[in-house]
Image 1 (cartoon, protein in one colour):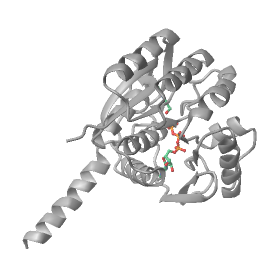
Image 2 (spheres, rainbow, N blue to C red):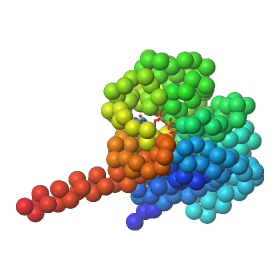
Image 3 (cartoon, helix red, strand yellow):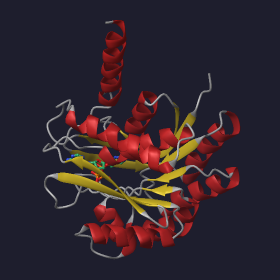
Image 4 (cartoon, rainbow, N blue to C red):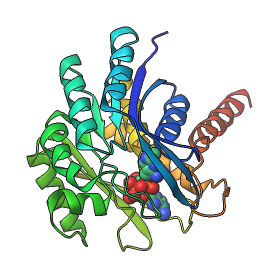
Length: 279
Ligand SMILES: Nc1ncnc2c1ncn2[C@@H]1O[C@H](COP(=O)(O)OP(=O)(O)OP(=O)(O)O)[C@@H](O)[C@H]1O
Ligand SMILES: Cc1ncc(CO)c(N)n1
């Protein structure tokens, strides 16, 4: 049996719904061996971020090198990178290992408003990381910061995707979670030539903590298994839709999504097929 391996380079969320914790849970659910390089430790729960403690860039590089030199990496994702120094260090490591399955979730601000990326680090992300990126997955406010344009319509999402592709990202997904549309959520994928649309119905829930991390981690896991970017985005969309719909309802604020939901649905479908075959 081939073991596919994915690395997340991101911040720790003590509450378990976002960051490294969401990524590893998602990798595990999608049958990929998960590894991590932690960039910062946050004290965080469903109510907000109570503390942010970045690690020295040297510690981040060392974790990446330990993993890369021994276990190997089929795909990686970045999440909270916090500073220009960490971004440059991560970009240097990606280049020296020659990794190509690179998913960049340009995390900037937590749901409660706490900053997870210093303002002056945005340029480092554009200059150093986007040229090495296979898939970048901004939400609408992040895409606005990266492109300098305001995004209100689907056409704006498309234009922002074109601008981000011009920075060097091979594929761009502009996620629609923050759009004003009330009945559906449309994620736009741009491959440098054409657009594809991934549409789900909008779940009316406060429990969306870590949706972006989970979605990008699912794309990464699918790329690690050798799937194409459009197929990986399709699976990620199903994974996050199930995780939001089958809510856990825990915590007093914006609760985490349900990382078990997608696997539970697949298992149910499977057992229906098996029962059908027996009958
Ligand atoms: N209420 C919702 N109902 C259905 N799908 C949603 C909802 N909110 C977000 N999504 C989906 O979840 C994924 C993440 O989108 P979103 O725009 O919320 O990311 P994000 O803001 O980066 O998340 P976070 O910062 O909480 O990690 C996308 O695929 C999006 O379509
Ligand atoms: C550590 C961490 N990464 C990313 C996010 C964005 O959801 C968060 N809230 N916390």
